[in-house]
Length: 110
Image (tube, rainbow, N blue to C red; front, side):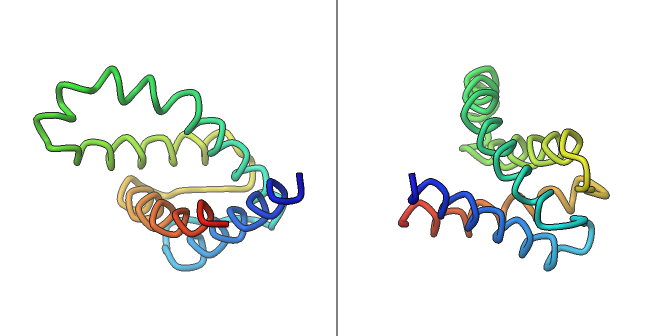
């Protein structure tokens, strides 16, 4: 249970860091980042596998690069759902999801 809590807080800190680095992403407070961490985890667990399966042909044609587009779209969707988080455009969402994915690998090692 403690490990799950540590991962949750670490992911919220990474989301806050991404919002601090990428100019088009803004977060009101840390609680919004905590809620966003839960929402992003649920989206990645439920919606993302379905989208990956449905877009498998285009994903094969682009050698997996279309997954980056899906990640950005899901990041924008999470920002739309969570109050207190705003993403100004697709490029900000793309860079934010890319940085979030790279930094999220460190959380998997915890």
